[in-house]
Length: 146
Length: 383
Image (tube, rainbow over all chains, first blue to last red; front, side):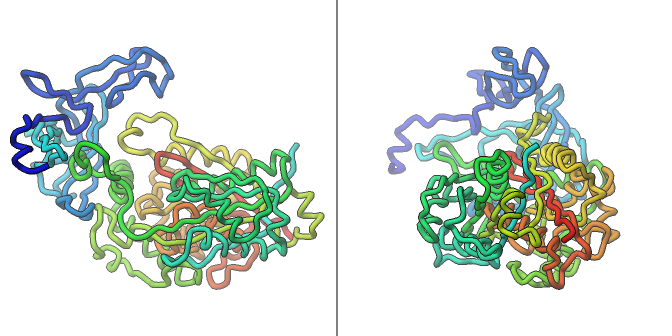
């Protein structure tokens, strides 16, 4: 597809992963699924609880946009074209749900990172990455809560 | 009570890079080696269990028989991530244990190429690697190590010492990919891949194969092979039971602890009875976790275990005297059976410079991320 063609198409902003929900107005959020039987929270849509095996007990919920840093790695070598270094972070969201993502807004240095440091979830363009149709994507990132 | 099952023949090739060979050709060398080890032929085998990951849809087991003997026996091709070889071995064990056969062959083989594993490409949308964190294996296992550091204060240096130890061990293993000493500063100053794993703390992608012939006790005695036979005291396989973060952060601990509990119970043994361990050191961070997961020490004492040299050759419980995945190399589908080869070789007293003295009982462990854990306990009875 030529650049001219891309411009004539109405490019959309799409979620980088299906559990990012983008409303017509207002702030995006991360969607979890909560089991009404046992209370477990999963990331992304599902029908059956893999903890308690309950069926038809899954309810979509808005996950919190704050949480705490649980674990991380600082990635210095990735696939070609992926900018390094970056922090691959695992964050426990307040109220439940664990999500992996890039931690930004802080030096990628283990000395700067503290376990359980407060984190906020922010939504931004997906590092300029576009698909073959020229669509932009909205992604989530973690930032230290200041 | 079903019969005891034995390994009567076992072999692995020297791990390396063999781009000019086909996967079945690589497999054939270990298969023939295992048959030669017990003086049997492919015509004596009643079934074949073949582990391979990257050609999981390409009938590797049948193609292996097309190389070494098309006898028409049942062939089962097995894929279970990095637990593939152990799963093939276990399926072979299950079949003889069930009484279906009394002499079967298990083979594991992989042709790897170089480069990072994990964080695969996508068909639609945009790549997620480096956007939603990392799915590369060095990062995933780094995060598991950081979780241990969070709990117990484990240090970068302690993780690095695992690599120093395993590289040292492999200098005594002619079948390892590398025979190179890597002092602590070399390991710590190597290229950082995913903190805290440097390049020398990541397993080596190599091509390789390993194979084992399994037999019932009756068959072993009938063939007069008991003098070198190694008894399979336990075989355990688990998947990932639900854990709070497991779907985001693969949990290699819970499935290992469950498999270890099953294996120790089946064998009627405890960790204190084990003379050597070959465990899944796909990354240096992972080995530390498994000291505790396998009960080699109490929770929180893994750092101390490596600091005090208890897990080195000559220590209380030597771990990965083969050089481990870090230095012997990690051909995914072959690794589980290569571990069986290593432990059997020690139990037979044939391990040369790296021989664990008076080894009588050994344990093998692998993790396939996603997850599968395979554990086997092997014993050589006094002749």
